[in-house]
Image 1 (spheres, rainbow, N blue to C red):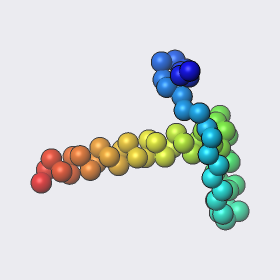
Image 2: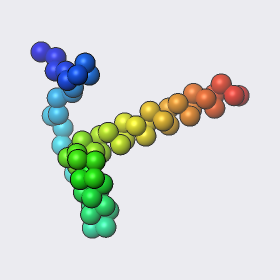
Image 3: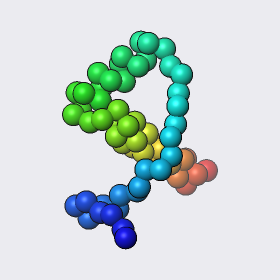
Amino acid sequence: MRLSLFGKKLMRKAETLSLRVSSEFKKRLFEEAKKDNRSVTNYLETTLTQFWKTKGEKRATSKKEQ
């Protein structure tokens, strides 16, 4: 069974990731997630996905320029 929401595919979450971070980083992470009205997990997934997408587009652009 495939899960989708508003036409977007959803991935089942079966993995756990533990991180050690400074208390300042953790506080900022929770604050930023709250500002976006997201869970911390969703905030991290969304932010990193956007970052990777942008990074990939920059790589593609620099390769075209070479």
